[in-house]
Length: 98
Image 1 (tube, one colour):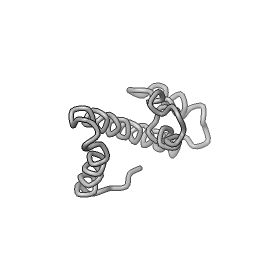
Image 2: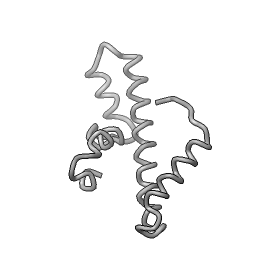
Image 3: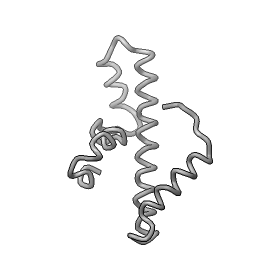
């Protein structure tokens, strides 16, 4: 999760996302979709980083890791993470899951 990516890579990905919607819905609408997914990706990465840090510190105590994660600033259910949604992207109902 800590892999550094360049600003150019981010820009290209954002433009590609915009190109997906361009011409089918208004920019005001697809902007909301894209920003929502970026935010979800960000909080999923932060959550995973915290989990990885706790696992490194307390690897042999999964109950302690879960308790620590439950006391984080925000709680992200496993089924609501960006990665869980991405894995199920071809299944019906992704809009409802989001």
